[in-house]
Length: 95
Length: 139
Image 1 (cartoon, rainbow over the protein chains, first blue to last red):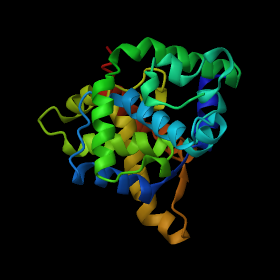
Image 2 (spheres, chains in turn blue, red):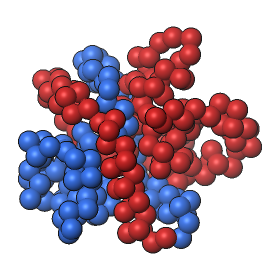
Image 3 (cartoon, rainbow over the protein chains, first blue to last red):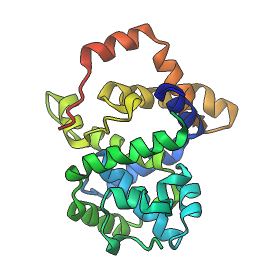
Image 4 (cartoon, rainbow over the protein chains, first blue to last red):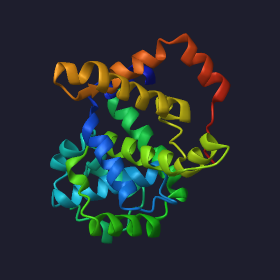
């Protein structure tokens, strides 16, 4: 499988709710949320932290609600997004 | 490359880019969102990324708008379809078009990125624009 094929497959699974997306963007602007020094990686990390906390450390549940691969939070050999971004433990309840 | 290998590559890319991650800024933003009652648990990662990008794009001013937006976004090098301003804008414009024309008509607000991606990929004009205006200021 080439990267492009994988990307297409992955993107096909990525369902975006248009209204929700624009609504969130509007809320960020209306509340003057400071997005300086966040970048794309920061946006992803905020998503990871929010969902793993909401799932109380349940990797499968967080991956499902965030709509990401199950390996994103996979605990085996600690090769997962939380560890590889070096996210400090104070931000997450991942077990 | 199987999916697991691709995910491993993606994770390695995260590690490579971890030096641009600012946890103080992340904590500050999360506190602000909590105070404002913004709950991200209702959104998927793609929705969060697009919404953040849109907010940055809408609030960034200046003559070199695209360059300024990309400096505040720094897209992941591994995310090829997302790796430049034009690609993001095209996705959003497509979302807007479909939202107005077809999605509402169909009574369904859910779209797949594959559909969006294919639409942009198939457009010769878009390919030309991307080549001309490619902006990938990653490091």
